[in-house]
Length: 272
Image (tube, rainbow, N blue to C red; front, side):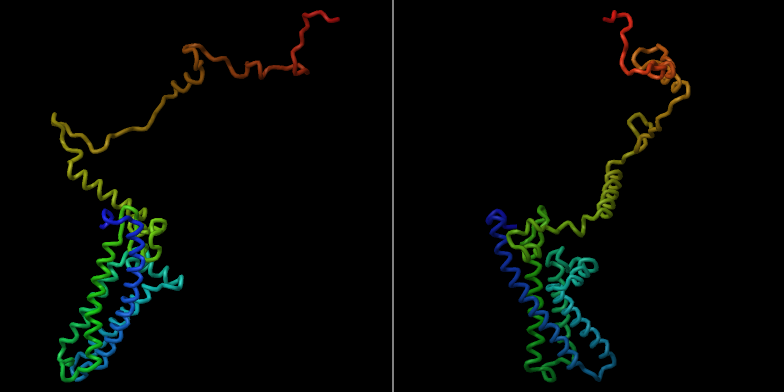
């Protein structure tokens, strides 16, 4: 976006430090959100009929926070392959946009839980209430920042994502991974078929010509064919002089009787 004002190297170098700091803030926010979910589970109104499902919803939200934290630090090789194969939008082959969207959803869910009757100001106050409120607000703030940074530090022409810049800085061009998920052979063939169908519908390939005759979309081309007479003539005549019959191969001097010597003998010359 700002390549006109700054060079790519300086922009990527600054993005390395900004994205690393954002990663630390994101992990701290997710830890606070997971703790807030457990506070809400403890403080849930147990006298209502469906409080169990509310607890289950908050439990899965806390698991989602831990899932996103592991996606930010996939230290084990098995974990990296798992995210690349099963959750590619959270792996190192994609940017931070989907990560930010997931954090915003978790923050909205936490703040929305405060609207329940069991979490009013009388029964739910003090440091726990401040923790829940702060974690929800931080989730929305850092979720938006992740999306903004994913759009700023991204270069589709070079195949660079915000995670590439966060990992390699100004050397991100040597480790570009942007087309790895969307440019597979199967997807490229499928896109080519879809594009050809769209073009054929737009330009009406195979429609009637000006003279009223129908022209097919593809020309009908038959395979090469030859007759036996032509084959016989081709093998029996000379390829250099048309109409001249080629002698039998058995009559070639190479196939005739040879003398014992491999060299010619000059019998007509006098010997001294």
